[in-house]
Image (cartoon, one colour):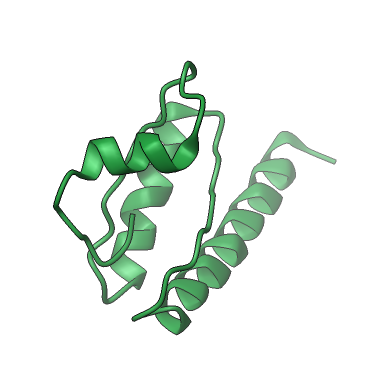
Length: 88
């Protein structure tokens, strides 16, 4: 397998995952659903987030959870305050 083929596979996998995530977000509109997405590479993560925002009709707000956070709910609540975005 060539390096280019490996990259093409990753692109296809990422595209498929983005489509599934965009669909899940759209189907969850109006109700609380927790979807966690993780990407180890900062540059790729930014690119994938932009692509996801392009695919979704709802505004997506990005939160970074501190490694020292002990509870996810508290961390999200603290960062959002009284703001209630359509998707986080």
